[in-house]
Amino acid sequence: MPIRLPAPPSAGCTSGIPVDRHQSQHSNAGAGRPRIVDRRTALRLAGGTTVGALAIGAVAGCTDKKVYEPDPLAAQEVLARADAAAATAAIAVTPQQHAALTAIANERTEHADALRAEINRVIGVYGDGTTPAHRTRELTPPASGASAGASGTAAPPTQPPSIDELRTRLTKSQQSAGDLARTQSGYRAGLLASISAACAAQAGVLLA
Image (cartoon, rainbow, N blue to C red; front, side, top):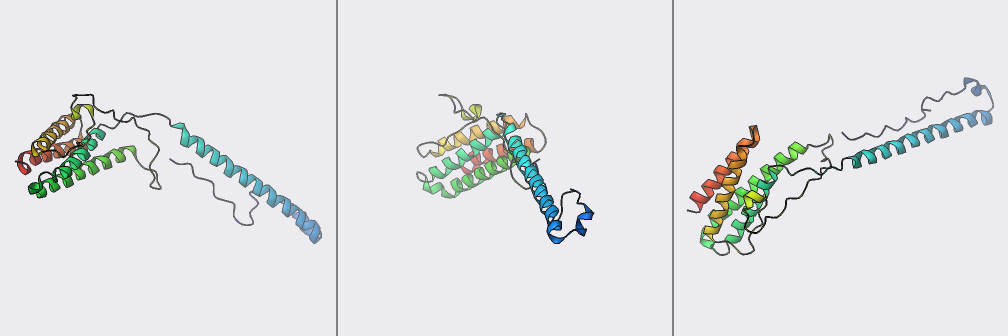
């Protein structure tokens, strides 16, 4: 939770500093002097409180220096966005499949967005809608010959893929999402299972 700054003192308030009532019987010049001192004292105290609160807030904002492991769903988000980019790129070399490839790109983007929303939900948000600082270890690129699903990363191809290559990518994404679904529970398991089924339909029906 964020540290809220204290509310500034109300106008004319002396922040609880007592004022000698007998001072009101003195002359105007004498009466004004205690009030000026009291007001300055109140402002000094209020300023000190504000600076202290700001310092505490700054320290609190820097205390969480832990680097967290990536959310298990993060790798699936990367796969989905890479598949969407690959499907879009494939339109250039297979324009006759424009409709199917566009549908795949749009659906895989929706998968990525749904995964990101779930990742953010777990991280949480503050009451004012801002996201807390959450340092996460970057996903490492796959070693030569490693599968994208196993490494957790999947860069889009440098060259537009053929339909067969895209089908292979989607099949791997299907298997990866399905395998992860079996390790999760509740909404996450259902989300991953739906994504796996969608990838199967894309590879086996739209690209048949």
